[in-house]
Amino acid sequence: MDTGSSVTWVTCVASPFQAGDYSYLKSKTFMRVTSDECPFTLKYMSSGLINGIFVKDTLTFSENLKVPNMMFGCGFPADAPIREDFTGTGVMGLSNHPVYSMATQFGSVFSYCIGNMHDPSYGFNTLILNEGLLLGNSTPILNIISKNYVNLKSIMVRGEVLDINPIIFDRDISHGGTIMDSSSAKTLLADDAYDALRDKLKQIMAPVSAEAMCFYKLQPSQVPEVQFIFEQGAKLSLGMEALFSPGQSTPNVQCFNGVKPTSVTLEELLVRNLTLIGINAQQFHNIGYDYTTGRMHISKTDCDDLPL
Image (cartoon, rainbow, N blue to C red; front, side):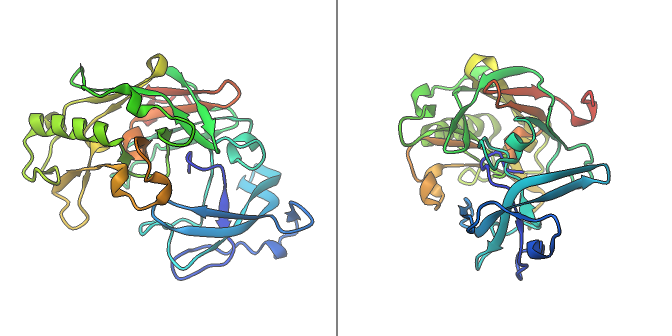
Protein backbone atom coordinates (compact mmCIF):
# COMPACT_ATOMS: atom_id res chain seq x y z
CA MET A 1 0.00 0.00 0.00
CA ASP A 2 1.68 3.16 -1.22
CA THR A 3 0.17 6.64 -0.92
CA GLY A 4 3.43 8.04 -2.30
CA SER A 5 2.89 6.50 -5.74
CA SER A 6 -0.07 6.15 -8.09
CA VAL A 7 1.18 2.97 -9.79
CA THR A 8 -0.12 -0.44 -8.72
CA TRP A 9 2.04 -3.31 -9.93
CA VAL A 10 2.41 -7.05 -9.48
CA THR A 11 5.41 -9.22 -10.29
CA CYS A 12 5.20 -10.79 -13.73
CA VAL A 13 8.49 -12.67 -13.63
CA ALA A 14 9.73 -14.02 -10.30
CA SER A 15 13.34 -13.49 -9.28
CA PRO A 16 15.57 -14.64 -6.38
CA PHE A 17 14.57 -11.54 -4.42
CA GLN A 18 11.03 -10.88 -5.70
CA ALA A 19 8.15 -13.35 -5.32
CA GLY A 20 5.16 -13.61 -7.63
CA ASP A 21 4.45 -14.80 -11.14
CA TYR A 22 1.49 -13.15 -12.86
CA SER A 23 1.51 -14.67 -16.35
CA TYR A 24 -0.69 -12.13 -18.06
CA LEU A 25 -0.50 -13.77 -21.49
CA LYS A 26 -2.12 -16.87 -19.97
CA SER A 27 -5.00 -14.88 -18.48
CA LYS A 28 -8.33 -15.18 -20.30
CA THR A 29 -9.40 -11.73 -19.09
CA PHE A 30 -6.15 -9.87 -19.88
CA MET A 31 -6.36 -6.80 -22.13
CA ARG A 32 -3.68 -4.53 -23.53
CA VAL A 33 -3.93 -0.87 -22.56
CA THR A 34 -2.85 0.29 -26.02
CA SER A 35 -1.93 -1.41 -29.26
CA ASP A 36 1.72 -1.00 -28.30
CA GLU A 37 3.25 -1.85 -24.95
CA CYS A 38 2.72 0.92 -22.39
CA PRO A 39 5.91 0.98 -20.26
CA PHE A 40 6.60 2.36 -16.80
CA THR A 41 9.63 2.68 -14.51
CA LEU A 42 9.55 3.17 -10.74
CA LYS A 43 12.48 4.01 -8.47
CA TYR A 44 11.98 3.62 -4.74
CA MET A 45 13.64 5.45 -1.86
CA SER A 46 15.60 2.28 -1.09
CA SER A 47 17.05 2.55 -4.64
CA GLY A 48 15.03 -0.47 -5.76
CA LEU A 49 13.95 -0.30 -9.40
CA ILE A 50 10.87 -1.75 -11.13
CA ASN A 51 10.33 -1.72 -14.90
CA GLY A 52 7.19 -3.02 -16.55
CA ILE A 53 4.19 -2.45 -18.77
CA PHE A 54 0.63 -1.40 -17.97
CA VAL A 55 -2.09 -3.99 -18.54
CA LYS A 56 -5.79 -4.47 -17.78
CA ASP A 57 -7.28 -7.55 -16.16
CA THR A 58 -9.92 -8.71 -13.70
CA LEU A 59 -8.82 -8.30 -10.08
CA THR A 60 -10.26 -10.78 -7.59
CA PHE A 61 -10.40 -9.50 -4.00
CA SER A 62 -12.77 -12.22 -2.77
CA GLU A 63 -15.20 -14.76 -4.21
CA ASN A 64 -17.89 -12.07 -4.25
CA LEU A 65 -15.74 -9.16 -5.41
CA LYS A 66 -14.23 -9.40 -8.86
CA VAL A 67 -13.54 -6.14 -10.68
CA PRO A 68 -12.97 -6.29 -14.48
CA ASN A 69 -10.77 -4.06 -16.63
CA MET A 70 -8.61 -2.74 -13.80
CA MET A 71 -5.43 -1.03 -14.99
CA PHE A 72 -2.18 -1.91 -13.21
CA GLY A 73 1.47 -2.57 -13.88
CA CYS A 74 3.07 -5.86 -14.81
CA GLY A 75 6.46 -5.50 -13.14
CA PHE A 76 9.86 -6.92 -13.99
CA PRO A 77 12.18 -6.34 -11.00
CA ALA A 78 15.71 -5.17 -11.68
CA ASP A 79 18.80 -6.75 -10.15
CA ALA A 80 18.05 -5.76 -6.53
CA PRO A 81 15.04 -5.92 -4.18
CA ILE A 82 12.96 -2.75 -3.87
CA ARG A 83 13.65 -2.99 -0.13
CA GLU A 84 15.60 -5.53 1.91
CA ASP A 85 12.61 -6.53 4.05
CA PHE A 86 10.06 -6.51 1.21
CA THR A 87 8.26 -9.87 0.93
CA GLY A 88 5.21 -8.91 -1.14
CA THR A 89 4.37 -9.74 -4.73
CA GLY A 90 3.60 -6.15 -5.68
CA VAL A 91 2.54 -2.70 -4.47
CA MET A 92 -0.88 -1.02 -4.49
CA GLY A 93 -0.46 2.61 -5.56
CA LEU A 94 -3.03 4.89 -3.91
CA SER A 95 -1.83 8.38 -4.78
CA ASN A 96 -4.03 10.44 -7.08
CA HIS A 97 -3.84 9.85 -10.83
CA PRO A 98 -6.85 10.14 -13.16
CA VAL A 99 -6.07 6.96 -15.11
CA TYR A 100 -4.10 4.22 -13.37
CA SER A 101 -4.24 4.90 -9.62
CA MET A 102 -6.08 2.12 -7.80
CA ALA A 103 -7.71 4.77 -5.61
CA THR A 104 -9.25 6.68 -8.51
CA GLN A 105 -10.35 3.44 -10.17
CA PHE A 106 -12.26 2.71 -6.95
CA GLY A 107 -14.09 6.03 -6.71
CA SER A 108 -11.34 8.34 -5.38
CA VAL A 109 -12.25 7.85 -1.70
CA PHE A 110 -10.44 5.42 0.62
CA SER A 111 -9.09 5.07 4.14
CA TYR A 112 -6.70 2.94 6.13
CA CYS A 113 -6.06 2.38 9.81
CA ILE A 114 -2.68 1.16 11.05
CA GLY A 115 -2.14 -0.21 14.56
CA ASN A 116 1.11 -1.43 16.10
CA MET A 117 3.56 -2.02 13.24
CA HIS A 118 5.94 -3.83 15.59
CA ASP A 119 3.36 -6.44 16.68
CA PRO A 120 3.06 -9.22 14.05
CA SER A 121 -0.03 -10.61 15.82
CA TYR A 122 -1.99 -7.34 15.51
CA GLY A 123 -5.03 -8.17 13.38
CA PHE A 124 -6.97 -4.93 13.00
CA ASN A 125 -5.09 -3.05 10.27
CA THR A 126 -7.72 -1.99 7.74
CA LEU A 127 -7.88 -0.68 4.16
CA ILE A 128 -11.25 0.45 2.78
CA LEU A 129 -11.60 1.23 -0.93
CA ASN A 130 -14.48 2.88 -2.78
CA GLU A 131 -15.91 4.71 0.25
CA GLY A 132 -13.56 4.94 3.23
CA LEU A 133 -14.01 6.25 6.75
CA LEU A 134 -13.53 10.03 6.73
CA LEU A 135 -13.09 10.69 10.44
CA GLY A 136 -11.62 13.59 12.39
CA ASN A 137 -10.30 16.95 11.24
CA SER A 138 -9.19 17.34 7.66
CA THR A 139 -6.51 19.20 5.77
CA PRO A 140 -6.16 20.07 2.06
CA ILE A 141 -4.24 17.73 -0.25
CA LEU A 142 -2.08 19.18 -3.00
CA ASN A 143 -1.45 16.65 -5.76
CA ILE A 144 1.86 17.25 -7.56
CA ILE A 145 3.30 14.67 -9.96
CA SER A 146 0.94 12.05 -8.46
CA LYS A 147 2.20 12.60 -4.90
CA ASN A 148 0.09 13.68 -1.93
CA TYR A 149 1.45 16.91 -0.47
CA VAL A 150 -0.02 18.42 2.70
CA ASN A 151 0.73 21.66 4.51
CA LEU A 152 2.57 20.88 7.75
CA LYS A 153 2.50 24.03 9.88
CA SER A 154 4.28 23.14 13.13
CA ILE A 155 5.60 20.42 15.45
CA MET A 156 4.68 20.33 19.14
CA VAL A 157 6.34 18.43 22.01
CA ARG A 158 4.37 18.23 25.27
CA GLY A 159 2.15 21.03 24.01
CA GLU A 160 5.09 23.33 23.26
CA VAL A 161 5.52 24.51 19.67
CA LEU A 162 9.10 23.98 18.56
CA ASP A 163 11.03 26.97 17.28
CA ILE A 164 10.93 26.03 13.60
CA ASN A 165 10.37 28.51 10.79
CA PRO A 166 7.21 27.10 9.12
CA ILE A 167 8.46 28.16 5.72
CA ILE A 168 10.76 25.12 5.67
CA PHE A 169 7.70 22.87 5.30
CA ASP A 170 6.44 24.76 2.24
CA ARG A 171 6.87 23.58 -1.33
CA ASP A 172 7.99 25.92 -4.06
CA ILE A 173 7.89 25.30 -7.80
CA SER A 174 10.37 22.43 -7.86
CA HIS A 175 11.21 21.11 -4.41
CA GLY A 176 10.48 20.88 -0.69
CA GLY A 177 7.06 20.36 0.84
CA THR A 178 5.54 17.60 2.95
CA ILE A 179 4.48 14.22 1.52
CA MET A 180 2.30 11.57 3.20
CA ASP A 181 3.85 8.23 2.19
CA SER A 182 2.56 4.93 3.56
CA SER A 183 5.24 2.86 1.81
CA SER A 184 8.11 4.49 3.70
CA ALA A 185 8.69 3.17 7.21
CA LYS A 186 10.65 6.12 8.55
CA THR A 187 9.87 9.82 8.56
CA LEU A 188 12.17 12.28 6.84
CA LEU A 189 12.13 15.74 8.38
CA ALA A 190 13.49 18.89 6.78
CA ASP A 191 16.92 19.42 8.31
CA ASP A 192 16.01 22.27 10.68
CA ALA A 193 12.88 20.44 11.87
CA TYR A 194 14.83 17.23 12.44
CA ASP A 195 17.45 19.05 14.51
CA ALA A 196 14.84 20.87 16.60
CA LEU A 197 12.81 17.72 17.35
CA ARG A 198 15.87 15.59 18.05
CA ASP A 199 17.37 18.20 20.38
CA LYS A 200 14.10 18.56 22.30
CA LEU A 201 13.69 14.81 22.75
CA LYS A 202 17.33 14.51 23.83
CA GLN A 203 16.83 17.28 26.39
CA ILE A 204 13.74 15.60 27.87
CA MET A 205 14.72 11.94 27.66
CA ALA A 206 18.52 11.68 28.22
CA PRO A 207 19.37 8.79 25.85
CA VAL A 208 22.05 6.18 26.57
CA SER A 209 23.47 6.92 23.12
CA ALA A 210 23.16 10.63 22.40
CA GLU A 211 24.54 10.42 18.87
CA ALA A 212 22.14 7.70 17.69
CA MET A 213 19.32 8.73 20.08
CA CYS A 214 18.97 5.19 21.46
CA PHE A 215 17.37 3.99 24.69
CA TYR A 216 17.57 0.74 26.64
CA LYS A 217 14.21 -0.86 27.50
CA LEU A 218 12.30 2.28 26.60
CA GLN A 219 8.80 2.59 28.09
CA PRO A 220 5.85 4.57 26.62
CA SER A 221 5.67 6.70 29.76
CA GLN A 222 9.20 7.98 29.07
CA VAL A 223 8.27 9.40 25.65
CA PRO A 224 6.64 12.85 25.43
CA GLU A 225 3.76 13.23 23.00
CA VAL A 226 4.82 14.75 19.70
CA GLN A 227 2.23 16.29 17.40
CA PHE A 228 2.46 17.23 13.73
CA ILE A 229 -0.01 20.08 13.16
CA PHE A 230 -1.39 20.54 9.63
CA GLU A 231 -3.26 23.35 7.95
CA GLN A 232 -6.80 23.80 9.30
CA GLY A 233 -6.20 21.80 12.46
CA ALA A 234 -5.68 18.17 11.48
CA LYS A 235 -2.89 16.55 13.50
CA LEU A 236 -0.89 13.37 13.96
CA SER A 237 -0.08 12.38 17.55
CA LEU A 238 3.14 10.39 17.84
CA GLY A 239 4.06 8.20 20.79
CA MET A 240 6.84 5.68 21.41
CA GLU A 241 5.93 3.26 18.61
CA ALA A 242 5.81 6.09 16.07
CA LEU A 243 9.05 7.77 17.11
CA PHE A 244 11.30 4.83 17.99
CA SER A 245 12.04 1.42 16.48
CA PRO A 246 13.73 -1.63 18.05
CA GLY A 247 17.00 -2.79 16.55
CA GLN A 248 17.00 -6.09 14.64
CA SER A 249 19.93 -7.48 16.62
CA THR A 250 19.23 -5.56 19.84
CA PRO A 251 15.44 -5.61 20.41
CA ASN A 252 15.81 -4.16 23.92
CA VAL A 253 17.36 -1.02 22.45
CA GLN A 254 15.08 1.41 20.64
CA CYS A 255 16.37 4.26 18.49
CA PHE A 256 14.83 7.41 17.07
CA ASN A 257 13.60 6.64 13.58
CA GLY A 258 13.53 10.15 12.15
CA VAL A 259 15.86 10.78 9.20
CA LYS A 260 17.32 13.85 7.52
CA PRO A 261 16.71 14.13 3.75
CA THR A 262 20.41 14.91 3.29
CA SER A 263 21.23 11.44 4.67
CA VAL A 264 19.20 9.65 1.97
CA THR A 265 20.82 8.71 -1.32
CA LEU A 266 17.82 8.88 -3.65
CA GLU A 267 18.42 11.87 -5.89
CA GLU A 268 14.81 13.03 -5.69
CA LEU A 269 15.10 13.46 -1.93
CA LEU A 270 18.37 15.36 -2.01
CA VAL A 271 16.56 18.69 -2.13
CA ARG A 272 16.36 21.21 0.63
CA ASN A 273 13.53 21.07 3.14
CA LEU A 274 11.69 17.94 1.99
CA THR A 275 9.58 16.29 4.70
CA LEU A 276 8.14 12.80 4.17
CA ILE A 277 5.80 11.31 6.78
CA GLY A 278 6.15 7.53 6.78
CA ILE A 279 3.87 4.78 8.04
CA ASN A 280 5.47 4.53 11.51
CA ALA A 281 4.29 8.07 12.25
CA GLN A 282 0.77 7.15 11.08
CA GLN A 283 0.30 4.30 13.57
CA PHE A 284 -2.86 4.36 15.72
CA HIS A 285 -4.60 6.71 13.31
CA ASN A 286 -7.33 6.34 10.73
CA ILE A 287 -6.25 8.22 7.60
CA GLY A 288 -8.98 9.00 5.06
CA TYR A 289 -8.46 10.42 1.58
CA ASP A 290 -11.14 12.09 -0.51
CA TYR A 291 -9.73 13.07 -3.88
CA THR A 292 -13.13 14.39 -4.99
CA THR A 293 -12.88 17.19 -2.42
CA GLY A 294 -9.08 17.29 -2.21
CA ARG A 295 -8.90 16.60 1.52
CA MET A 296 -7.22 14.18 3.93
CA HIS A 297 -8.89 13.27 7.24
CA ILE A 298 -6.88 12.25 10.33
CA SER A 299 -8.31 10.65 13.46
CA LYS A 300 -6.31 9.14 16.33
CA THR A 301 -7.94 5.80 17.16
CA ASP A 302 -7.51 2.14 17.96
CA CYS A 303 -8.21 0.31 14.73
CA ASP A 304 -10.31 -2.35 16.49
CA ASP A 305 -12.72 0.43 17.55
CA LEU A 306 -13.55 1.58 14.01
CA PRO A 307 -17.28 1.72 13.14
CA LEU A 308 -17.07 -0.92 10.39
